[in-house]
Image (cartoon, rainbow, N blue to C red):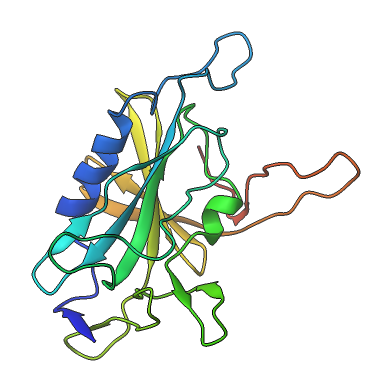
Length: 208
């Protein structure tokens, strides 16, 4: 399935999307100054970025009121596009952190999903439609999937993106391009106190 002339997702779609996420209710600067924890009005929003035969699009934001630094919960089953239905290839997901924190280990694992022959959902490293079709560009190359994070403060946002290999980039507004920062891997908590949300292990260490 050929969906694009290029495997690069246009920044003029990504950056306005990230900025729009930060302007939604509770998406930024929604922290309790005493505890540093999210206030009750804090919200994490997740959107899917996808490509139709006509253009690039972004899904309606899904609002998550559960907790800060959890993970983006993508729309399993695909997006509902008004022109092309549900079986359009999702390129990746973007979300925000309402308290300005860094990415979490679960964030690194959220990518497009497709349904296997056994009926199970599986995350993949490439743009994919829910029916299991992988998207290719005009040269026949698979289109890599990406994830994006908007964090920081509303007036001073920080934007990050990463691929399934854990290669993390930060947007440099002055130079108008994505700068490589580190290669990161998720870390799982251990011990008797139950699961905790941990920051990834990055090489070199990310400077937040």
